[in-house]
Image (tube, rainbow, N blue to C red; front, side, top):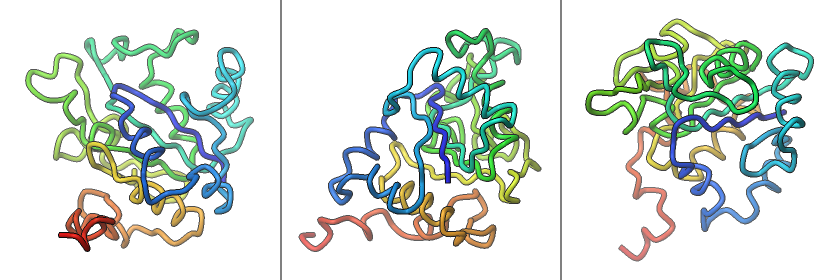
Length: 211
């Protein structure tokens, strides 16, 4: 399965969590062993500049089929719904437009972290940037894609929330998608995978035995 990862308005902490998890030895190798190909990640891919933009354009117009779109960071709709607070460099288009185009092509869409799921800290206070999540605006359904949106595979946005996410949550979610083992019954009312959202965080802590 091909995976495209975009970073919107966030700190990059979820990527750092993914790479720095002490219980994961070589997460990229683990992806490869599970049949997941990281086709594009802004911090991890070798392609840069025009190569990256050509790949994004091919994915957005259907010339490059891919399976999973991961988005990290909040979606900035401001000012006045234009999205011009966050332009994707070299394209003349707002990031929210790219997210909409790519989401329409993906079999599955995954919100990585609380910013992408619900708007996170970017949406706090007066929210002058009009930040929101992919399919939630705070705790309310809606967000950038709308409450009724579904990916090509039939699922809504899968919200792997956390600030930052635990590496196991995103890795196990992606592996479940690659294995065809995650359906809508596996998501809670906030569209989070139940395998982690219905547990306490410390249940999976590798240091729990020392508590």
